[in-house]
Length: 617
Image (cartoon, rainbow, N blue to C red):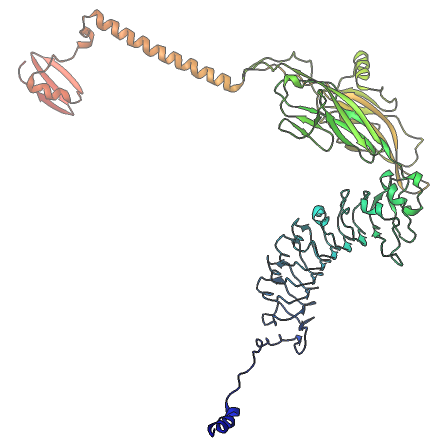
């Protein structure tokens, strides 16, 4: 019992076990203010002159403000392990690069401000991990591309998306359509030229859509707009109303915008940019009856075309209308044609058959359609048998033409009437093509004295094979012009316009003088000498044959003479030569013999400049 009081006295002296403590907080970065005494923790570094994200951040912080600095990039380790961060502001820095996964640990983040930086693109991995993000501000950057999967992790939670003041020409509309909880969508001050139909149909909670100052000429009707009874004014609008801003766009006020005109608006300043009759007028002051469209009209189509099998063929169709019609092609079998392994359809209305087959012939139908209707035109294609093979050195040619093939010749009355009947309406009396050749034509027009203040004349012409207009500016005192560099065998449409100063407005205006249609002469292939390679090869073969024949004749003559003398060389060949040598002299004959002489049964051989006497034969 005496020991118990002693133990009680010593008990206070024993070290008490300390309760568990949290990790030691990191020091506050230099030039920053840190709130670490109470929750939530915050690190405030606005305008601190930082060149990078401070490495000594308190990883427990719930708020991090790094705006108005000089941070150029966000690395993967800069924000690692900050799992409790709720608000991150990186506004107005010089950020050009965000590493993939830089925000991967910020799974609790609610707001991310990256506005006022120098981002040019946003990839699929740069916003990975932001599964609770609600506010994403990307305005005032240099964004030109937004990846389709960039917003996948925050698509279900995002409520505010600001992409304004960027360089976006296209958007991943399918990805934007999955933002089911978004309330505000800012797309203003970009380079968007079109919006696909139904792009906003699934944004049921959308309350404000800003598409101001883009390049939109039309806005397609959307189910989202049709569900709302009123596009209300921004001020005082009810909670269920949608605020739509689309001013500052070059709107083309035709029948495609009637649906928008029928919505009640009072204080917006949208205006029409086209057509010319409505240009500059206040959008909401234009009556619904003035929003009209023009049905398409086919202005040009290919004439009947004949090609041999195996060759390509191009069928052309041009149409005008308001809005611009879309051209499609239907085959003779009734199938709608598009891009395939054998055909290509171009936006300008051209259908190109890469390789024609005998079964491709028939009537092809060109269909031009827009919102006001459609127009059709038929183009006949004849596919003949394949051409026979031609020799590379063929010398077939056309009959010769007297004079220079490029010389101008006045068209005869018969040919002129035939061309007029084939190509269209007669030539305008004010403009005449008096002479033409294969590559040139002389154009003449009368004096335009009734038009005061003429500065110059303008000639416009194009070929039947394309729609590219060629312009020529002619001095005011000229009454004719020689067109050169024309294509042979083509039909040209030509118009002359007088450029003058309008006294009423003081502006430069144009007035048509007249138009004409003419055809250049087909190019003839003149007869000429055979090709140089052909002549060279023939000469080589002939010369070789002569040489070979000469050698054979020489060999034949030698054989015949040898046979006549019984297998022995003739006497004239033995004259002056020694008889066969003895054994002692045999070796001497193996050397080159310079001189041989036989006298009195003796043989003397003079070889290599030395006299050598052999024994008696």
